[in-house]
Length: 106
Image (cartoon, rainbow, N blue to C red; front, side, top):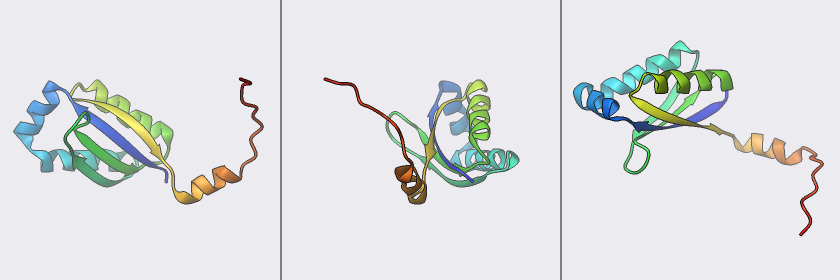
């Protein structure tokens, strides 16, 4: 299954919910949600900076990842951005592919 990184920014509502429920309870919700769409949660980390939470999960595919981002963002507590993660083997396969490309001339 493909691996995804979700970068999450909490809204004011999301921060209030986190303070009320706690991080462990929110992690359990994330895990159940990922499992419900056929995935496996790998990690959840809270962080300083522009993004508040980093989540890695295996999901059945891009449509599942998009659905997860759409539904959670639409609920109003978070804003997400999704990064497709590739393994070394996948990058090696990409490097072996022939691509016909001509760069612009200066």
